[in-house]
Amino acid sequence: MNRAKWLTIVFVVVLGGMTVWNLCSPKREYSETENRYLQQFPSFSWDALFSGEFGQQFKDYAADQFPQRDAWVAIKSITQLALLQKDNGRVYYGEDGRLFAVPAAQDAAREERNCQAVADFLRWMKEAYPETSCSVLLSPTASTILPEELPANAPVADEAALIEQLRQAVGDAAVFVDPTDALRAAQGNAFYKTDHHWTTAGAYAAYCAWAQATGVTALPKEAFSIETVSTEFYGTLYSKAGLPWLRPDTMEAWRTGTQAGCRVSQDGGKTWTQGLYFADYLSQRDQYSYFLGGNQPLTIVETGVKNGKTLLVIKDSYAHSFTPFLTEHYERILLLDPRYFRENLRDWVGEQGITDVLVLYNAATFAEDQRLAPLLTAPGKS
Image 1 (cartoon, rainbow, N blue to C red):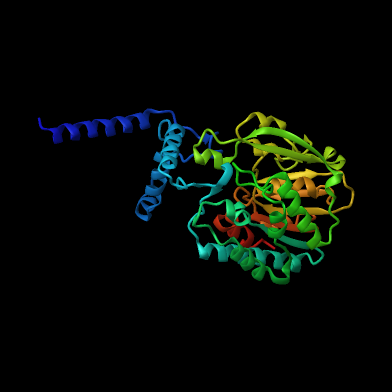
Image 2 (spheres, rainbow, N blue to C red):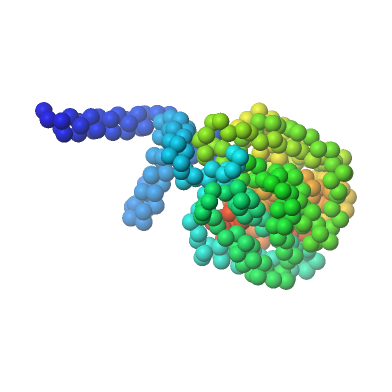
């Protein structure tokens, strides 16, 4: 048997063995390392097959459920770094151990839909509930705030253009807040190095920008008791980077007396947890869920501030470390995540006694969110 045939046999055996290993390995629903749910085996239908949806989902399933996935990701990243590559397709390796998310391919049509949906919803709110005060805060990410720490010539999204696009769409329907200057003034402390979220200091800078724009009196920094709650925070970008030697971030909680009297419900008010912070997460991989307990369809915060004001926050997870600063100004805060909320929003709003609305997103998530526009534009029954 010649050499070519032997190589073919070895290749087939290895490929077949890997396939059997993949099929026989226990399937995981959630990756603690990557802090996300993994693709499960897709449901088959002829429509899904011919549209290409089944094929794409199966491809994602095979990648997510590949045996020893975390180890292979680390090996790939280390190899790429040794070859002087500045990214692994998911993160850029920046200066001094800072990681940046590689942007998703731009979908201009989706961005336009999301901008217009926010504007249309806020105008509907002003017509249906004329006394409601509305604001919008769209935050840039670290790639916009810290371009000097990016690898040279790294392609990044034009977040400033998206922020301006949303500003133009919203017009006079709401107070628009662009926290870019405030985040830049934080001098590199506004974002974690291993995670895409802003730090608590970054959230405070954005809160001050929001307060100034909306006429709210922001609490000075001296009003807070600042506590380091973790020195071992590894965020989602660390999980995507696969570089085990990167240093962890430090996580802080900025506390006030008002926060101590708050309580949180994640099931529509059936059960409550005292306080805004969930300390159990500090011993888990997803430490950022220390703030408000992580992503939920609807999180309700009751503050004990008796001013009759209820704030609806339509948001992504940037709002979680931002919300503790809002507790000084509202009696009740309703945090709604469009990715998971399944009720009719316009009907639901009418039952909540809402006095204020804040749409709070980071630019990257806003550009990619496929659930936002359908939620905001679905007509109510009345």
